[in-house]
Image (cartoon, rainbow over all chains, first blue to last red; front, side):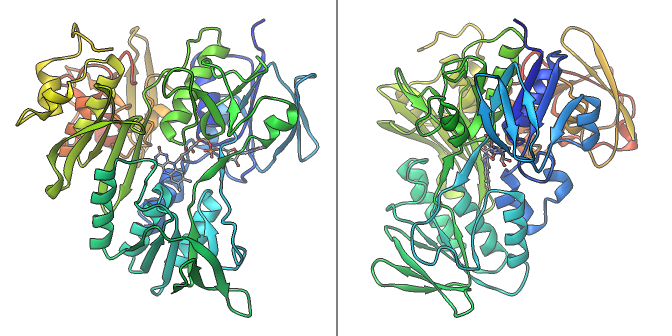
Length: 420
Length: 107
Ligand SMILES: Cc1cc2nc3c(=O)[nH]c(=O)nc-3n(C[C@H](O)[C@H](O)[C@H](O)COP(=O)(O)OP(=O)(O)OC[C@H]3O[C@@H](n4cnc5c(N)ncnc54)[C@H](O)[C@@H]3O)c2cc1C
Ligand code: FES
């Protein structure tokens, strides 16, 4: 049966793209997009970057204007939360008391920041950064005389924020439990190189350090960070950036299969065939045979949104997009393509000393991912090569003078022998 | 304000009014024109807002910077002489009448 009504839970990156793509692909049934946040859908990446400095304003954040939802006939409900999914009746219940019947349901509930499980985590001046409201609060605190800022966690959000706060003139210390920054996301080469850049910029990095407690004043404002080794860091602003957890409780309560995210098949369908899950909240087959992964990126949320919209319109193919991610820190453009986690060999091309280079990551001789700094061409080419399988071998990449640009120009992708 | 025409791969045309300070990319997004993805939201990171400027066009466009030039190496459809990133084309009255062709794929 063709779907006549689609309900989308979560009006963030993935939810908005699902609704928009459904219409763009010609779906003419009812589309309802329900978001808990009080504002229309916006993009999160600038929240740890240009929004904090003022370079990016509210208008630039919004993904679409209000008139868009009218002209596309998308019912956007903001400031309301879905509190229950009734799979049996194909119906969702809203916190405001309303109900919505659906033929297809899309879960795009995103993720929430992990809570730091130490005493003092509830003090005033201890923040996380996920929503526009979080970013507004942070921006107000950073827009003033120099503060002593402690960032807990050297992930993307933490480091971007550290670098931005430093550039705004604040004193910044990053505390990280792992021995290196972005330990899960980046190769040791890039991780160490990037850590140096942060230090040169004046960010203090405390690696292999764990927070034992946050201390505060009698009035409940944060005053410092106490580390396990006894070190005390004075801080009047603490931002926790120790990763996120998928928001899958609604799905679990409804009886859908979950396990660090809503479990979906290659078509992004959950254990109920009328319910899809995408973006930060979904765990899908990928990362090698028999494995499942959950990714937190704009690319992942938007490509999965389009995949699901196509499926609901009656087409559809398994989800296979090459993952990619970008970050901006220390005035650098960082771009990652593919999944580099279990590489066993790397080749660095370009000029690390000039801040323009790429690290090609191989596993058992196959290119699995490429990290680039200040080399947008390499990144784009890497995404293509990972898609077509027509990548250079590690030996080819090691040839003096090798560049991905000349490789791609000399061997345009049509008609290439592929390793895949 | 400028009238911008987006030509789809099947030849269909969509004509929309785009207002400064929006870009040719945002003009497409606000009108839900399928064929421009713009995943990075206009920060010249993704190359999924690729367009071909109509070859007969005489509309004056801002010059391409080094980053845009680099990003265009990685587009899903082959780069041509007339390739641009639509997020790097801010709309001004001068762009009135611009015709851009949408590539077959963006990612
Ligand atoms: C500060 C920051 C910087 C980032 N920078 C980058 C970057 O540079 N590059 C990149 O690729 N990615 C970046 N990301 C990650 C990217 O923003 C996310 O991966 C992306 O937003 C995921 O989209 P989503 O739709 O899955 O979730 P979200 O965009 O988080 O949307 C989920 C929405 O669902 C709502 N919701 C949840 N439950 C309910 C419910 N029951 N009822 C109603 N609404 C509900 C939430 O309130 C939320 O608005 C960044 C994220 C943050 C926080
Ligand atoms: S929108 Fe990403 S490069 Fe233009």
